Image (cartoon, rainbow, N blue to C red; front, side, top):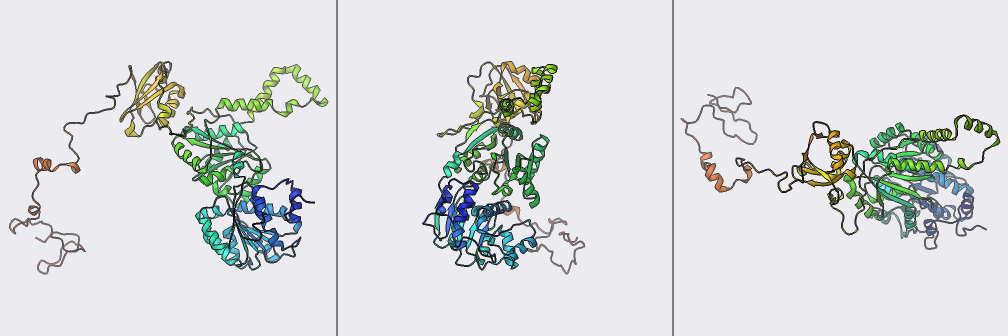
Length: 622
């Protein structure tokens, strides 16, 4: 007796065969008695089992009470997904779910051979899965017969609208029979989705699946403060620290994907790329490499990674911050699926900190603010993994003992252990040495001011003050001055005390035992990058005089701000009527310009004087 009594028997048996012990909240919700054969608008987060959910929901409608499908003809069910990868993934899921029903499932996605798809549709299919553009093409060409459809499913409906598929979706829904069921699944239900549902659904049951909070608990969110120059190095250290079986790095552009792919390949990472410029075959090979272990890191854009499911994905890195909370949730939802734990790490350069705070707040996520793993922390983590390697606990085999004794006798245990450690470390990319940036945890009551994160250190101790020839008027800020000082002066943030900004000058407090080394590091010209001049100051700077320049007494005021009295006293002007007073004929110079002759600007023909000798001349003939 199946433990899934309310499910079609063939599908219940497939679930048990697949190893399902219990249904997820969204799967239970679509099987409730309140839904029945009605339309549904379902909101559930990614990774919550939506594909199996709508497969279970439409099965009674498609089978019509039978245990198996009859011979395939015109499609009975249609599933629309936003991307090729998601559509092909949905097809794979439905194939094992409907295996015992004898269902024929066809796919129609962009990038595949249309002729092959057309032949599959001509042979007959019970369920068709496709992307909006390709499905519309097949409908327009008469290859996809919509007359027998009983159910239409829109998967990731919010994403399809965001990608501009509204017109295609409306075309597909208009072509479907009026009596079909329409099920919409979406991570969020914005106004655009609600409007689409009102136009194409009848008395739809609104389902908001539970368990979304639990999914977020399975994901550890970390916001990592980095210097702008260390953004890529921080990603390398994060990948090295976690050593995830599968990691996904998100970028906002194709150019960024290509750049990071080249960089990580050079650093000995097994990496693949996913972006819109790749062909369907290349994208399929990349995902297969991730699934079978030939690659561990996938660098992708949001569109290319939409809907992909990597079973062993343990780490998501946001190399570029997502544009909105929904994208953040979708990216992070690639990990922490089906009860597995995952980490979502946001790389936060100093100039994007406020934006990151708003993004996390709007997404309802509480992240741990920290610094990225340092090189020492990565190496310590490597040592822990070596000590925890199961191979060290396995007993010595008889066939190995002879050579082991010889090796220890000739080289010694210490030399053998050192060689073993070197071999283990040589197989991994060396971690990067990062600039120190203070981790920032925003206060729930009042966020810290921008200058407060680095410029207030009253208990700094013995120090020397330096003057930099850049100030607020040159947009100087501690968040980029500190990394520049550390990089150029060869020191860490701990050696920098207070930073006091002035309009044309900045005063920096540096630990006394580092002052001479700092001057030696910046060179005899005493300049930082951008020709910023550095001067050593004796004592404490006088902020009441620093950076202030008296205005020159002979400086002329701006002409737009002269007062009436000033103009009359120093720059008397002629009255307006004198400015345009006509001169007598005897006083008028021979080269006087001809008065304006109309809007066209063309000189009128003077019969007495004749035409002008040059067509562009405005002077009267002598």
